[in-house]
Length: 347
Image (cartoon, rainbow, N blue to C red; front, side, top):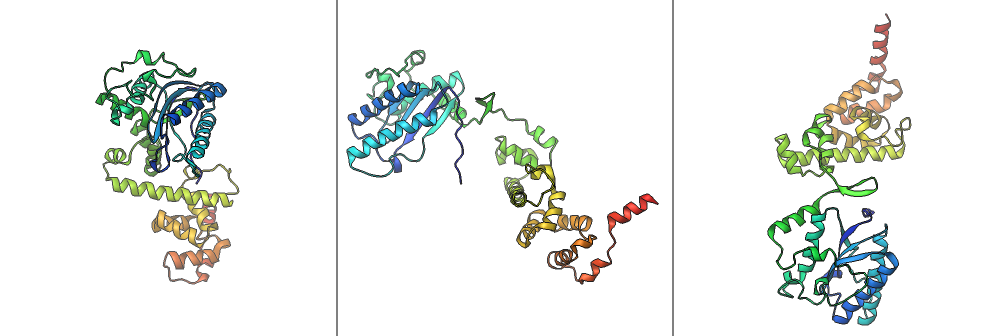
């Protein structure tokens, strides 16, 4: 499965990267100084500034600001160059980092200031120092003077006190906030009220929209006065319907409709009709599982049963899926309900 594309915009980012299997990536002061030199050289190429950092034993934190849409490029350069250095020095081979780096876009001024304190507090939290600014390999120690370091924001943050529980809660809230693009800029995603989702959509679609919007299944269950298990089941079945629809759409069975047609726009009746007409045996079997025998039979009787073009198909559906004890000749005698209706209207 392709990994999710990282959201990028010009601005501040909190970056974290760990050693593979949480192994040490900085063995001594020479390693840490080499990393900072690579950071400085990369900043000259990619034009970013650093506002906080902490080089721990098996991971690092960076708070930087980009001036172009090049975050992935610059971080790939930094991590690759340091990996080459470290592997050569330690006479090792293989990846140094545990997957791709993690990043959080900083979209709020208070978030930014709290992050500076959080990054610089990491050695205190790990028991490597007793207060912020004491650990050698943090920006607040003010020992190293590289051109990419910008102390302006740090000077506006009170680093004399440890992080409070309120600050930690705020960081947790900020980091979990869903983001979206607004005019090509990243901004917090504000959830719609649950009432909005459920006022204009069928329940299964509304549940899907609410989950995409950021609501938990527990929140949705409480709103609907259902159990979390019930909501989970509805959502799972809905996703099965969507997956089956997309599979058949990509096969081309909805040839007379737009290629961008979705299950939500098509509706269950149209989908079931085309599923019964053009799906293979396994697809139809899954259709009966996710839509239920009652719904499938209703659409079959309305759309297919009287269609003389599908006598063999109707016979199979009736005998195999609906348990009807009939012969194929039965369908030759079935009147076309739609035709009879038109005749009645014309008379």
